[in-house]
Amino acid sequence: MTEWDIQPRSSACAACQTPFAEKQTYHTLLGPSGDGYLRRDLCPACYAGASREAVVSSWQWEYRLPPPPPPEPIQKDTAETLLRKLVESSDPNHTAARYILAVMLERKKILRHRDTVQGEHGNEVLVYEHVQSGESFTVPDPRLRLDQLGEVQQHVAELLGQRPHSPENKEAEPATGPASAPVS
Image 1 (cartoon, helix red, strand yellow):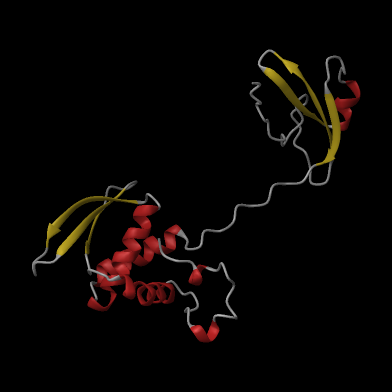
Image 2 (image 1 turned 90 degrees about the horizontal axis):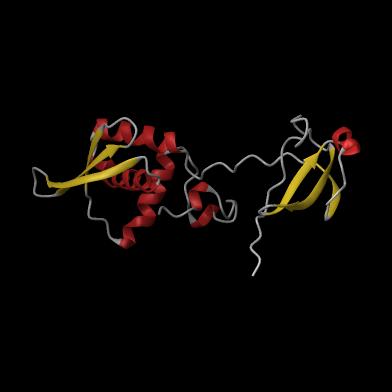
């Protein structure tokens, strides 16, 4: 069985290294190499002088800049900044939000769970470490039930400045918007 090394389109000419511009015509030559096939994307000037010997396939195309990466549903620094504010305030009304933000940042590999200790009132306190800075965060475990997650997600979205998720505005919201994305 033949294994294919699929090579992506280049962003610059293989011969002169000049970057391709938006909607610029470029030419691709595909030919055998020691390990399979070699793709060469060339600007029109380099293509005119290129050897066509041992070329298996060639085509002409219009270069398109790759689209920018989509924004994350909840920006990392926004969630991190909010968690820092909530940890400093230690407002008991935000206990569940602190916990959800810490879990989100753990899943994004910004925070690392280091330990679980007993708090002053017998509750569990999670100890997180910031991966880059080494800072420690303590977050009380609110012992959330599954039926409470929707309310906490809405509270976190409101704290992050997003439109609250409710049945009244459900039709007005985009289906994949940040406020409708489940916290995972």
